[in-house]
Image (cartoon, rainbow, N blue to C red; front, top):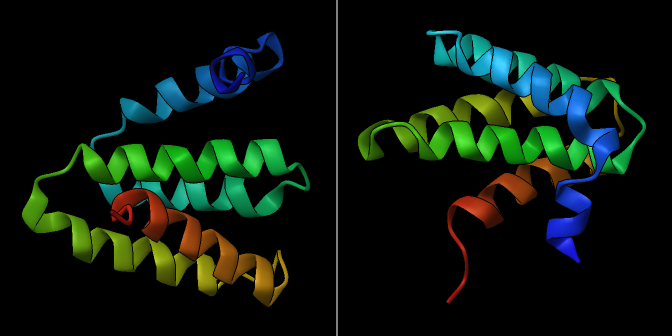
Length: 103
């Protein structure tokens, strides 16, 4: 079911945007762009897509840089007023849950 949703044609424009961001060499700029996209949408599907893109970006970085970059992304999310505090906290928690899954 998740694979079917993930490959839904409506997500194609999002995938095109994501691929363009992957060509940006500055990880901080990529994180900022993804945070902006995640927090400026009212769509839970789009928000999750961009948060998952942040996770993918973080996981692609050297292990020694991930915590610092995660904290940077979390600060960017918490600093926005585009969404309510609870939504900001949920977004940061989403990143943490994906980066450090419970066993």
